[in-house]
Structures are given as C-alpha cells and as structure tokens.
Image (cartoon, rainbow, N blue to C red; front, side):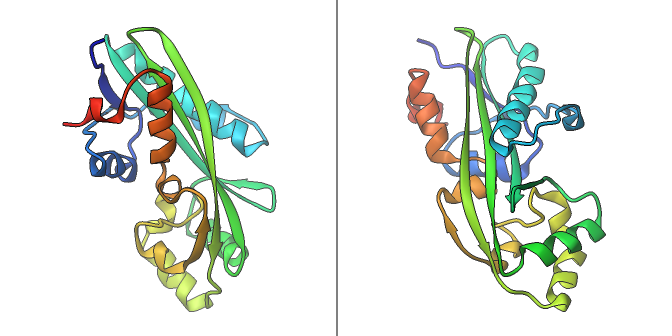
Length: 197
C-alpha cells in the first residue's frame, strides 16, 4: 500500500509544529471554512462537525492524500468558547476562567483519499487556570496571544504560565492530540512511522 501525502487542513502554526515535532512534515492547506455556518450546542459534536467540514473543503484539491482537519473549543460551565473576537471578550473570558477550569475539546478528522475512508473523533482535556490579577490579565491580552487561540490562551506560549494543571492529553490543548492521531492512523492501517520524513 502506497503512503499518501499528509495534508493539514489548518492554518494553525501550533498544529503544524506538533506534527513536525513527531516527524511528520505536512502540506499545509488552510480550509478557510466559515465556522459560523455550524450551530451546535454540544462541544464534542461541534468540534467533530467543524473538523470534518474543514477536511472535506480541502480534500478535493488532492488526488492521493490523507487530509487532517481539526477544530478546538473551550467549554466552561457548559458554555462553548472559540477564539475571542476582540480584547474585551478575551478579558471577560479570563475573568471567568481564572481560578477555575475548562474542558478543551478538539475534533480530529482524517479523510483518506486513496480508499475513500473517513474517520471523525474528538479528544477532551480538562485545564485548570491560575488565579490572576487584573493587571496580569490585561498584560497578557496586550500581547495579542489570547486573540489567536480557542479558549483565549496558548499552552505553548505565555498562556502556559497561567495553567496550573491539565487532566488528559497535553498536545490536545495545543490543538491536536498526538496519541489520538496515532490511533486513528492505525485504524486506517498505517503506522505513524509511515509518515516520517
């Protein structure tokens, strides 16, 4: 069985870096899918649908590829949060998050073009946030980092300072669960090493 090209249907630099860290150099092809089209109140269902739509948008552009779509949201007290739209929303989010916890959901879709197979799954990780002063929250938001991330924080950036602990998959919080990816590849009959450069 030939090994298809690995395509990441995401503009996320963090997801790309995660794949590169484990030896996979993906072709990056952002989907530019309009996420506002999908209205679902269950976070697990939402990230699965969004990850699938992103992968499906990109898949037709490739003849023989394994296309991965991902999407992440943070759920706090049952309320779903994606990327904040502006600094004020990020500030309000941190007022709620600090000293509390949220569940970060990431949907993962693999579309395998050669055999026309598709797998859709999600991973959830609980994230506990530190108690922060208003001054620290304002300083963090001023960096611009929270505006680029689901949940208004980047574990692999300055936001890592404000995460007390996590329960579950660490890489999931960055945007892609590496253990889940490995299991999904195995389910499709591949080994992770097949995609190493």
